[in-house]
Structure formats: C-alpha cells, structure tokens
Image (tube, rainbow, N blue to C red; front, side, top):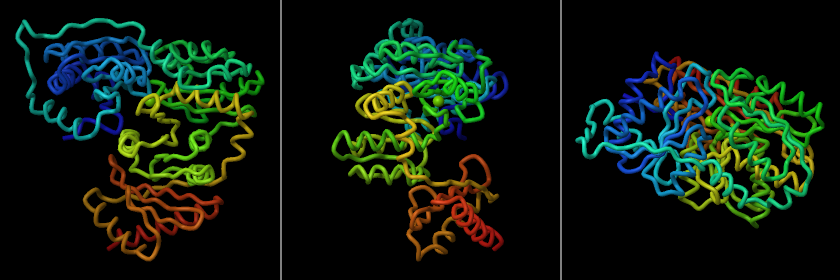
Length: 448
Ligand code: MG
C-alpha cells in the first residue's frame, strides 16, 4: 500500500490525516533514520497537533528532534544539509486547502526523499516494525532558532547583492499567509528592496486567498502591482518552496516564463551548462537554453526526480513550470526565496521584467484527459508507441510525440484511471488539433 504521494503524505485533518497516523509515521521515520532529525511546519491550524504527534513518534524510536518552528520547507532542507542531520520532516500541505495537512520527509543531503526510501518507511509503518527504545535511549526535543537567518544569509551570498541593493527596486510580495511570511520580507529588507506586503501574516485559515499561486488567486497582487507602479509582484505557495511572478505591467507570468528567463540567464552568465526540466515543460525553455549556448535534459515529472538528475550530471540549473526552481549552488531542492533573489538580480542587471518576458518565445499549451482503466494503461501506451513509430518519440515519461515546433505528451495519471494529454504548439489552433488527433488515436486503441 502507498502512503506517500508526489509531495509527501497528505490528507484532511482528523479524517485521513489524524494524530494516530502522524505518530505512526513519526515512529516509522524514526526507525528508518536514527540520530538528529529536524522538524518544521507551515502555519496551518493543525501544525502543532501534527508536529507534536510526529515528534513523539520520532522520540519513541530514539531520534533527537530539532524543532525549527514555523519555517519554509527549503529552510528545513538547508538546515538538515548544513548541520549534518540524519534527515528532516516538514509538516505542510503546500498549496492544498487549509483543512489539509501533510508530512514530507527530507533526506540527509537536504533533498526530498527518494521513492525507494519512502517505500521502506511505508513498509515499517504498515508492518508496525517500529524501533521502541528503552527508557535510557528515547530521544529528546530541542528548539533551534536561527534556521531562517542562516538560510537567507546563504541566499544573499549567492547573488549579486550590491547590484540589487543599488537598483532601488519596489516589489509587491504576496505570501498567501504561508510560511514565506516569516522569511521573504527579511530577504527583501536585506537586499534593500522596498516591499509592499500582502497576506504576509502567517495565518492557518489562509484568509487572503487559497495558497496555490494561480492567476485567479492573485488578483489583489496584480491590482496592487499596477496601482503602486512596482517593478514586479512576487507570490509564494503555502510553504514557500515555489515562487510565481507578476511583471511590471501587471501581467501574471506562468511558471514557464520565469523558468525560461532564469535558465537563459544562468547559461549565459556561466558560458554554457546543462538545464534539467521535466518532459512536460514548455519548448520555450529549450529554445532559450539553446539560444544561450546550453544543453537541456528532460526527466520524468516530479521535483525530486529533477533534483536527482541534476546531482547525477552536475547540472547548472533546473526546475519545474509550477514556479519550483532549483539552484545547485544553494541546494538541490525547489527554493522560493532563492528564486526571488535570483530574479531580483536579473531585473536589477537587465531591466524591466516585462521586457525579459517579451523575449521568451511564445507557445500555447492545451491539456485534456481521457479515461482508461488502470490495468490497461501499460498496454495502451505500448500500442500508442507502435502507432507513432515513424515519428520522433520520447518515452522518458509516458509517450511524447515531437513535431516541428511542438509536441504532444500522453502520461498515465498516478492517482486516477485516466491519461493526461498535453499538447504544445506555436498557435492555440495547432495545439488543439494535435491534442484532438492524439485523443482520437487513444480512443480507438481503448475500443479494442
Ligand atoms: Mg510547496
């Protein structure tokens, strides 16, 4: 049985995520990783309850718990890596509604835990094969301060802080009442950026707007950027591992735009290098990376997979289109504050964000889905591959048919009985046409 999804274990509080489960997971994690384990949380109303239960489980298995308090997920990851801890646990449900909470495991190098280690934790959890320490060996708990400060200090040391400080920038920052409220305002202060803040008080009911930074939730931010004549708008998700931007004209930027802008800048500044991104990312990213003299490598979808590929090949930069950018010089995980600092550096050096956005090639992406029973997914994908055998096909994750100036990707959903069909082309008409053609092929295969 599987507990961990793509971003840890998540559920609605006191329904599918309760104290017993949290303590059981704490015991399983503490059995799996001995030694010192950091724990942090976002501001959800259930944070103390779930964190206490996980901590009790960890201590009963003999782990020493280091409680960092309310911090962004990447600050826990940085703390684990920098202080040589055995691992970490973040209590967050990221962008999910406030009634949810979740438990996410962090490996000793600060990366998101790979699937095979989660499987071992699941095995311990379900078999109740917990280590139960005698009274001499149960763990203790200490509270550590300064995690956010050392995390931010490292970020500031990795960007051209003097140029940012001298640029006289104004930003509007929307923290979605999440964990970024306690860190990104400090970062902007250190970088001498004038910050007009929105929803920058941590509040677990998320009264400002839901914590997923999609355009519909950021209307106040967009209006305030326009009204204040700011240089850019910045929005985090609930645990501030992701950042989405609004340009100086008040335009909401889909994550592929900021990914492309940063990727091109990184490659240009470093005179080449490899950028890693999932197969579902826009061709705009590949275009700008190649334009700057770099290489691109595609992976399966999922930020831990991108991060591990980056480590394996020594990549310069990587990231996902949802605003999760990974900077190896800082750490191998999505990092909201590092993304803010790097984009400020780019704007300070190269001018208005709107002008940078306009240099990113335009593509249109459409998404659709088609039902398919789980047991037929593998066979249907094989048949789809046969059907497109004369085309250029990438099978990194599902089947991606590559055309001149576009592509169509068919991926089986990991959680639902359906295929997702993504299609990208220069025009919306072409994207729709390609996705409809592919859906028609799939529906024929499904009839057999
Ligand atoms: Mg998140």
